[in-house]
Amino acid sequence: MASIAAERSFFLTSVGKKYIMAASGIIWAGFVAGHMAGNLLMFVGADAYNKYGHALTSGVFIYVVEAVLLSALVAHVICAVSLTLENRKARGPQRYAATPNGAKAPHPGSTFMAIHGSVILAFVILHLITFKYGTYYETTVDGVVMRDLHRLLVEVFQSPVYVGWYLVSLVLLGFHLRHGVYSIFQSFGIKNRQMELRARTIGIAYGALVAAGFLSQPIYIFLFNR
Image (cartoon, rainbow, N blue to C red):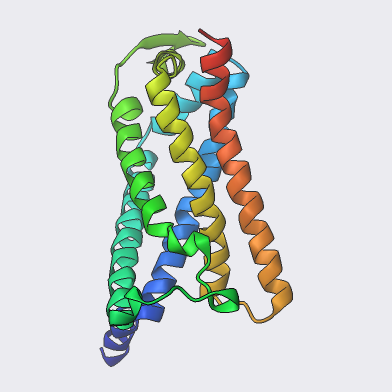
């Protein structure tokens, strides 16, 4: 019992919360990469895309995945808010002083992570409303009746307003992932300068790749599938 209590106490500390954020970040980073890759099936064709969507949402496994993702998201947001408040409280009146320069200056990605996160959270909610709970069209692929997500996708990305919102959100997601992936390495202990540079490179490459993959959909549909 003492061991369990100690573990609980650890996860209430700043270091423990950073571990939770790192672990939940890994879950979501893996999910968005897989989701982005699956979405690229749109370029293969409507049937391929709809079969992917049908496979993704069929069976009980989807409920397990959704439960894990929701738990990770809630934990990530709670820890992020808690750490932000702790940092502000620790700085006290100093937060009104001049921002340090040079090596001690805060990383721009770190400074705006809360803004990124808030916009991305709003985007996720709107994305679910639009696609998961949006208009239901039906189609038949290989004799199987399924939801026509491709039709909904093309319909939604005809709107300049939605496409603009999508582009801004996904660019911010790229920046969020870039800094987030780097922060995961930090949380689990970057021990030298060489590893730090590699972590930054991985973060930049990952964020750019995921954002570009997602952005290819609305841009292509809006410009060439009207």
